[in-house]
Image (cartoon, rainbow, N blue to C red; front, top):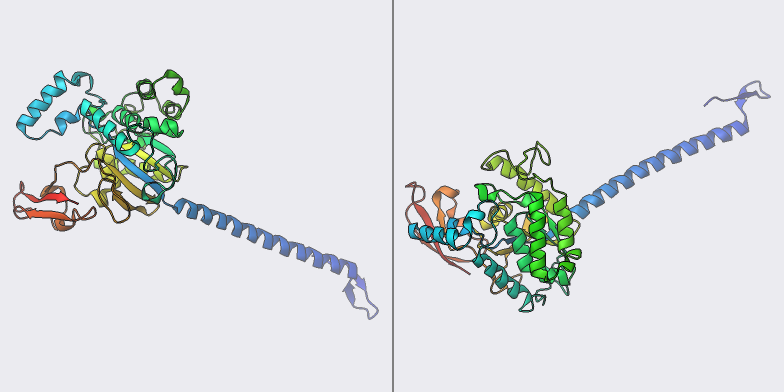
Length: 387
């Protein structure tokens, strides 16, 4: 500070009392300002940590594989004669030629949805026996599931409406499109339809399941239409949407492993950032197997198989297959299981770790067939049953 000096009686200049007091007050002000600024920084840091803590709270999810699609009739058939019969059924009984891209559910797939709907919601289709949407604690001790997220493909949209639609309408539960959850592209059947087609298909499903056009103004159709409308019309065919660095679909006829990893990380990030504490995702076998790869190993979930899991910034925990008996919850009898392709191929995993490839979901009866990787065509283990 600049000090004004007054002559003292002894001839030595001294600061005036008034100016000294002002200087001390100024210093006190600066000290308070500094403390306040530091305090603000502490508060901001605490708020940021609080946000991280809040984000770290796990999101509780139920993952559902869609019902059998028309193209699954052939792809999931076993043996030469099975494939021939499946192709005949696909072509002449299931309108396969019009279901090559983004197929709808087969008749069996619709039956699977009806079965799961009755298991979960009774014959009335709205009796919430497991408190998924209303009432007390739901599966896994979760709060009620406040939204159903859906891969924007016809087979998953149809599964969501056929399985959860009536109950979601009763409890005012939203359906929301989650485009990163589309199936891994291996063929043309894994390429989704354009936005306009999907919106019209969702309307048709809503009218079929809910019974009257007026219900289109209510959930679950209302929010689904809004979220579908956010997609670009060419979202599945334009490799620049939503961003050229990470589009919804890779510019390739087959999705690479590298791209799949990036897309699944994006999907998992969005699943962690949802506004709800608990939600349901209707997706695909490839998506579910990637998200829960540490748990499902080499197994393929059957159509309408359901899994419960808790997702945090550290990944998935407390994953439970809802069709089996686990210590932490009662099994939901009647839900789908894994596909009966219970053969683990030595070429599909770590050949030195097959004893642990199938442990998470319960005990197994295991029969050895050949030596691991001794012959390239050898299938190592056959799992006879799971309980």
